[in-house]
Length: 250
Image 1: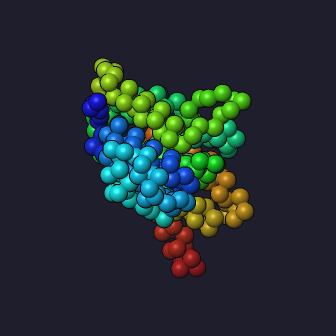
Image 2: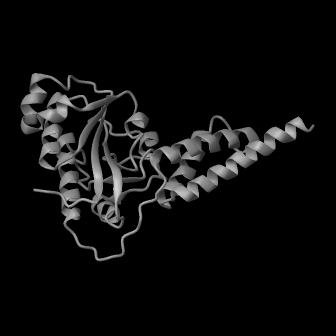
Image 3: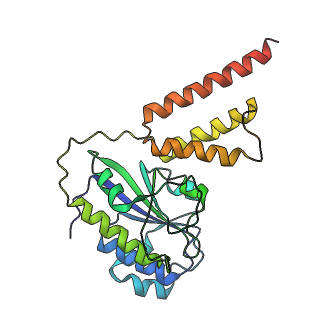
């Protein structure tokens, strides 16, 4: 089955997986759904074990050539669009989730995306709130409230199936040029914004993370463009310049 995709590369990212069987199953799914690269952040199991290789079957090459990173930030550094899966019910009240179907349909509204990343969290506790904020969009898979937890490889299979299904749709709309601010641009911008707001006294050290996370959520939900995030960074740089020079002139 060939994906009629509008992205050049699909990168599947696992964060701290602790089951080699799950990793092997995911590698097999990478082969089933034509994922371009498997990336693993700080694995907590032997991803090259015999068990993993047996489960991978024709996806064994994804194990042998997977890229390993020591942080999620580094794993998504070259990605234009980052999507994250969240299976947790109890998350920040400011968190915003969409269905995977809606998000994948949204990605089809663009002419071309270079590097698309889909992140899956730990088997036992998923992704942290700060990790979720590294993604442009966050989605969850609706399950029974009595037993909401999905096996990692099962979740990956559902998401890749949904992506494959979406790629077959003909939405008949005018395609837009992809120019969203990347996850890295947004992350770097908010590092500067937080430093500036702490400096002027708007934020306090013990509450800054919570407040800046809310602001970052607004920016992500607004589908901010590269131009818009650059304008925001320009404002921050100008304020910092003024603060630095006003001290010199005293």
